[in-house]
Length: 79
Image (cartoon, rainbow, N blue to C red; front, side, top):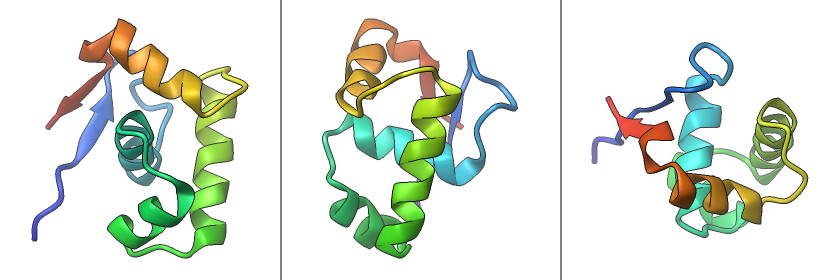
């Protein structure tokens, strides 16, 4: 199954492709374990991506990713 590649428009060049994919799934409410299964990554790698995303987007909680995407849905678009 082909995965959507996503990009964060506002953070162009700030997030890696995998971090952007992680943001897409965080926005859908996925747990770290579900993200790992969906992206075929280890749980530790997903935790690293989540930490990096929160840091780069200056957020403190993973729930804020979903809030941000609901407020500004254009930030995440399928490429």
